[in-house]
Every structure is written in C-alpha cells, then in structure tokens.
Image (cartoon, rainbow, N blue to C red):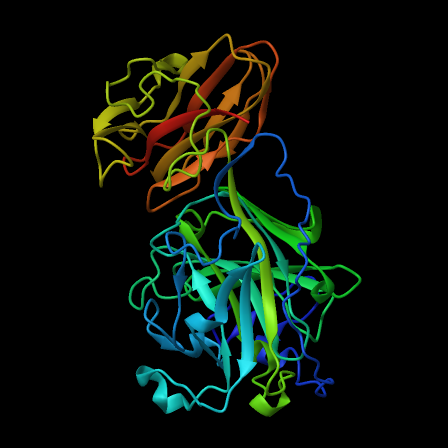
Length: 463
C-alpha cells in the first residue's frame, strides 16, 4: 500500500498522475451486511516445478500464530512513526478485529462512534472505523521467491484490502519509505471491482513507482482468488489465479528490491486512493461487518529453500571454495595474451560473507579475464548460478555466466554498478551432457585503476 500522497505510474489502467486524483468518490452504493463465509472454499494451487515451500501460514488453528505475525493496535505505526499509515486512512486497527476460524484468517471492519485515536495522532481526529492489520516484521523476513495467498476481498465503497511487502530495514529515518522498497501484490478498490492492482515503489533521487493490473471480468469480491508475485534479483512477475497479468513484468536492479522483505495483510478503509472520501460515504452501515478472508499465505523459493537472507540456497550441489576463503583453490583464470588482472584480495569495504572475496581489477592497463569453475556429472535439468557482486567503474563487459561446453555460447547476466553487495543470477541453463562451466568474465579495453569488481558467495542451483 502506497505510503505517499504523490504520484503513481500505473501502466495498465491509464491512470497517470496523483493517485488522489485518479478517482472521485462514487455515489454511495446500497449497504449490505457482509459476514465471513462459513464454508471452506480452498483454492487449488501449485507453485510449479522446482519451487520449495520455505514458509507458510495455513490458518488451521483457533488463534493467530504470533510466532509469525504482529498485530497492529492503533492508527499509529511505530515502525514508520506515522499516523493513518501515510495515506489518510479512516480505520483504527485493533486485535479484536483479527481472528482465525474455520481455516481462515478473518480481518473484519465495523463502523464506530468511539472516535478512537492513538495519543501520537490526536491532531488528526478520531477514526470512524475499526479494522484489522497484521505483519511479519522481525518474524518472517525473506528475499526472492514466489509469495502467494488465497484471498477473498470484501465488496463495498471504501474497502481497500491489501497483500503486500515492505523492506525489512524500514524505519522513520535514513530508511524511511520508500527507501526501504515496497511490493504491492494485491490492492483492490470498489470503483474497479474486477481488477487486481499491483505496484512497486522505491527511491531513485525521489519517489519512484511502477504499476500494473489484471481485469478478471467479474468482481474479485465474489470468491477466493490466488494473488502472487514471482520475485527474483532482476524481475517481478505478478499473477492472478496462475495467469500472468498483462504488462506484468517489472525488471529491476534497485537495492531496495534486493533485500529481505516482510509481509503485510490489512483491510484499510477510505484514504487517498479513493480521493480521501468522508466517513459518511463509506459503504459500511452501523451494526454491520465486512471481512477480508485469507485461506493461506505461502512463500516458495527455488532450489533447496535457503535461509532468511539468502533468497534460496543450493540444492545439494557442492562447489569448491565458493566464497574464496581459500584463495583461488578450485577456480581457474583464463586471459588472452596475458592480460589477466584478476586477483584474490582481502576484504574491501566488507565482504558479503567471510573474510575474503574475488576481485577483478586493472592497474591501468587494458585487460580481460575469465575466472571459472567446472562441474561434471550433473543430472540433466535446469540450473542457475547466483553470486554476490559489488562493482565500480566501467567495462566493455562484465558478466556472471555459465555454459555447457568450452566453446558454447554462454548464458549470462551483466554485472551492473552496485554501491553495495547485491545478489545476481544467470538465466536458466539447460544441462543435458552433465557438464557446466561457470564464473565471471570481465573485459576493459581502456585501463582505469578505479575499475574493480568484487565477487563472493557463488551458488549453483538445480531448479
């Protein structure tokens, strides 16, 4: 959910400009009581081959699993130090509006005359609604993979259900929104009831935004649907019920989107996405309840699952000296005409892991070097190579690459200029003959002593 009152770039539905001006308050529709459905409507879902479940909440118990979730209990957010979540929302979250029953998470909303307000937010006036808001910060924080959920959103003007993530480093200072990054997997509003809307927000000298959406053709509020993002080090793919959303792929290299994120689920009411409507216009009559229902939330990663900071680990493929802690053991340097300038060095501005890393550099002379390792006897299948890199200066090319024979054309990812350690990965490589040659290939025809590339923590993953 967008923390700002500024502009969005929303590609699919041609709504360019300030979000607060994208729509106007529609005539209030007839109110109708909306209670949580009593039947289980489990949606069939599979992540596809090569994806392993690394975390989930199936909401099978009788109460929220507090090992996974934090419950917000006011309209003040202590993480970001803001009131009404930076969007002018009309709700006051509380624990009483978060429940687990019948195999589902239930976030409920009701109108109130209590006018509740956090002590930090009294200057904004009391809130007109109670609602539910939960997140996994400090408990479930991961990076990359498929993040999916089966959700039923509530109908009615002013309802703003959301399934999204924020960078785990978010605070109210140097990493204030949007410098932490945000991925909106699902946002929904009643003025476009058939649409799943998704977005990405980050910092690029100012707030930067990207958005897309999918038109289901019938109201998403009518039943459960699966909302998903497939997030890698270089792209995001958004899906509704397993189908790729039109204009759905966002290609990125922002640091905010290459770090751990945590999950949020909430039922917001009103706010700037609706044009800041009055409480009286919201379709939630006194004495009625509307609910956002969640059957499950799941996080998958490729390969062996990996740790919280790794974005997925190897699937049992052992490499020799993958973090260069033993010098160049296991690695070979090739360069034409003796122009190699690859060296093993001590840490420079910190290693990604351990005490050492590989460096490609130049002493001012042109150079080209290919630092690689080989593996044979691999099972036929699809693979990726991942590594952490940090780069300064300019090159003819600099790549993380892999190939299935010495003379074969490589599959590669260009190493961009990153001010901090960043994980990248190659495209998928299809291995049929059991052999793979992989590593780092760098060339600079104009020597510059300021040119360097640091490389660390290499992984080979079978998908």
